[in-house]
Amino acid sequence: MMADKTAEVPNPQASATRWAGAPERGSAALMRAMVFLSLRLGRRAARCLLYLIAAYFFAFAPAARASARQYLRRALARAPRAGDRFRQLFAFAATILDRLYLVNGRSELFAVTIEGEELMRAAIAQGQGAFLLGAHLGSFEIMGAVGRREPGLRVSMAMHEPEANRLGMLLRTGSAQLAEIIPLGRLDSMLRIRDCLDEGKFVGMLADRSIGAAPAEVVDFLGAPALFPSGPMRIAAALRRPVIFMTGLYRGGNRYHLVYRQLADFSQPAGLPREVAVREAVMRYAALLTEFCRSDPYNWFNFYDFWGDGVAHARPTHKEQR
Image: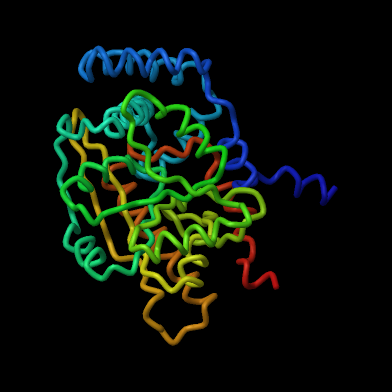
């Protein structure tokens, strides 16, 4: 009986793995057709399609709808209405559409405000490379609009292979300017990341989905225990590099707010054991996510059971299990 009961506890790592590996709704041909029309009709006309796409997912994705309701209840501190859930789906579709224009060099279409630009300029001037830790929150690609103003801002993306393949399929169009992608989980992944950093590049990673058996930490997120991967922080600690939190918040229409915040600096000895320093950095990351999920709640795009019944009632951390 105990084994059966344990098996029924929701597992956020398994949920994230299924969400990350699930096939996209709609065929690849339909996706390519949408890309073709969007780039030729223009953004204003293409945005009319977003209402149909958001309505489709709102009607025919019940699991994602239930997870969105769970998240919005925490972020809004009230019961979400149908309009709240639709608004989140529409923001998701809008950032995907805008991604097409951004990677095709159409940054003039967007009005971007920036917070923390001086932090990035200082990191570029140091020339030692740094990690940019984002999340499935808003848009990572909007950073390209800033990159054109900062010639020294060169970014390589490190991501799991299924997500990298989907990104490549979506963006391999026209004059798309794709950043270098480093697939994670390969034997040479760490070497390629190190080489990029040694060249003074930034390595971008999304650090809010704990997938499979990867090391993770249970920390507070929006008032409840949640599981966050510790791998990105462990890599930064091993390579002794600074870590900067980054998010491009979608504010409606063509408006984005790009935020950079100092998250951790593993290049400077802190006098703490590495495991403690990593856990504290993960906690700061989750705290920043909480801040922005409350200020811009419709920007969160993890449509699965993120909390997993209190993460099996706040299971021991990776360190405590040893």
